Amino acid sequence: MTLQYTAVGIQNESHMATSIDDYWTDLERLKISIGYAVWNCSLDLPVRLVTISEGGIGGWCLGGGDEHIRISREVVPEIPGKETEFLGALCKEHNIYLIAQMVAKAPDLMKDRIFNIAFIIDPNGEVIHQHIKTSFYQRETNTAPSDIWNLYLEKYGDDPEKLLDVLYPVAKTEIGNIGTLICAEGSYPEAARGLALNGAEIIYRSQYPEPWMGNKMNQIQNQSHAIFNTCYVLAPNIGGIYMPGMDDFKMSNGRSQLIDYRGQIISEYLSGGEALVSGIINIDGLRDFRVRGQWQNLAKDMRVEEYKVIYDAMMAKGGIYPRNLCMDEPPFTEEDQLELVKHQVNKMVKMGVYSPPDNWEPYEVSESVQSRINKAKDIS
Image (tube, rainbow, N blue to C red):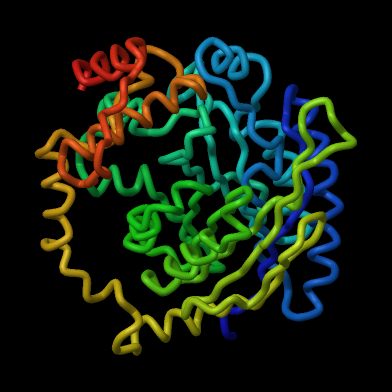
């Protein structure tokens, strides 16, 4: 029997959580959405994979500094936990794999830190995959692996193959090999390539807010990931998010898409609101194309020695983004994140990567942020 089935991307409306109750409001609504999606979309082929976008469960509990610690202790869930048990029961009921995301704690890794985590639950209701988001845009104040890099090295060692598995894990399942990317990290081709070189055949890539959906930046990235890595890209987005304490007001999103391994959009929903996208995933067709194709199965021809030089050179220059910023302190506030941007632009100009316009002067960076950068450098 050919390995093909229906996959669904749920586009739900969610709530910006200020308490754990907001997570459960979204979960109860998703129970209805998932049930409907499986019931209706199985008219094509049986639904075996359901995906939910970043922010679809509890939105984003954001806060740097002391607020980050408070939210970690008082608001966000753990994975696994009661929330994933609830979703696991739905997976058992409908015989599906589920890909979702939550802003959550990972106390086995580090206490008093919040992480942005994608996860996969199998039809037995078990969490079989977790991926911690590796990079953010400047409005997000969560913790990335590089922010606690020394802890990663202490916990996992410095073997590159082991770290590849830790940072870009791929779940090998009966319906294909699945990896996950969350929002901003999908803006970096290296992240998707890390999943592909770990065997990913399906990449879940949750979407951006506006304006990066309407200007198609996200779509271009996702189609590129599909083409460069010869894989499906499942890209659901939230339909809208209710602001804290404002159930009569929400910011709409949309443009959920499913993309095949040739980069073609096979399903999309352009508007906001509660909706879904659905398409046929043909894993055997992908596998056949990968082993018989002559050209567009591109990963087989990577000359890794040539590409490795790029990153070795940047490391020799001191790296780019400062690591270990959150070893001793919580993530920056949003205001300090923007101060860090100034430091990063100055650094790129100094390294000769950016050529500034005439009359440009280096930015002044706040003393507190510069001090934190220097401290992290000493840790490293």
